[in-house]
Amino acid sequence: MSFDLVLRNGRVIDPSQGIDAVQDVALRDGKVAAIGPSLAGDSKETADLTGLIVTPGLIDLHTHVYWGGTSLGIDADTFARTSAVTTAVDTGSAGPGNYPGFRKHVIETSTARILAYLHVSFAGIFAFSKTIMVGESHDARLMAPRETVQVALSDPDNIIGIKVRIGRNASGPSGIDPLVIALQVADETGLPLMCHIDEPPPSYEAVVDMLRPGDVLTHCFRPFPNSPLTGNGKIKPAVLAARERGVFFDIGHGMGSFGWKTARGMMAEGFPPDVISSDVHAICIDGPAFDQVTTLSKFLPLGMDLSEIIRASTETPARALRRPELGTLRPGSIGDVSVLSLRQGSFDLVDTRGEIVTVPERLFAEGCVIAGKWFQRAGKVDTKAA
Image (cartoon, rainbow, N blue to C red; front, side, top):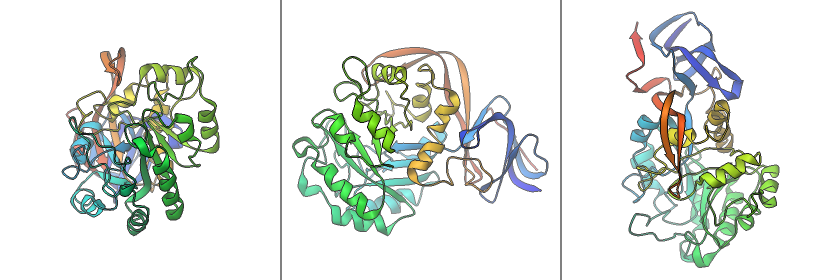
């Protein structure tokens, strides 16, 4: 059998197949062709990944990559190179009023795969910087349910859900009303919803009570106020009920939404996140979020198994996106692969409140393959052409 690219001798971690072993991964025609130990066959190119970790292409379920179109946007391809993320999901940077520009100038020109939650606000997140922050959900005049339905249904290949931001900062005097509107849009389009939550009002419980199976609550491990924990460290009943009915809980680290104290409490109560995402944008890319692999690394000292950390950035977000062809290395799936290293040393990891935890190991990005082709080769990767 002939292949385009064979990745040999890496530690393959693919939770979707229960694999954690040294194996080869072969790609052909943009898809995974085979996986197994010491694959036989000819290949146009091989890479020896001994000592490195090979995973399905990492999915960052919460990013802002409308570079040049919004003040918080970063470049998706640069982010993919530095973080080994093959699919960046933009969460509401664009609304129906400016989505066509996002699609033409960013989605269609990027090598990294970009999917989008379309904001129910007409102009998306339009005024978010270090000096100016205008909550787009403050003003009911900006809510655009009809237009959002029309645009969402016009591009099912790229638009995978509806976004709304709720909280004192994001929705202010409008309270929870934008969520009511967004849920109607999600119902009309048949798409899942992602809801941002920041400081109260409304409360964490009021927001999560309204979410449906398959919807995503992002910033789920945010610090007080609006933490998912009670004052005595117990998980709020509404949070447990939401997970029971199928709501996805996503980290969405960002500049203000991950706290070590909350994370320790949730993990101690047996409530790991479903999805780990960076919420990377222009204000947090230089800290405290930095990138996806840094965010993933923060769950190692919290006692989360490495395979479950990988699952939270591959198989589970693929389910949330309703894209089963992503987040797996099953033969026939899209040929996206991330290459990582787990390095030993002394590393400082900071949360959004300034607490620093020094850890003995962390993940680093070493390279990635998108649709069967190298997008970023790291220096450690020994590649050979036939």
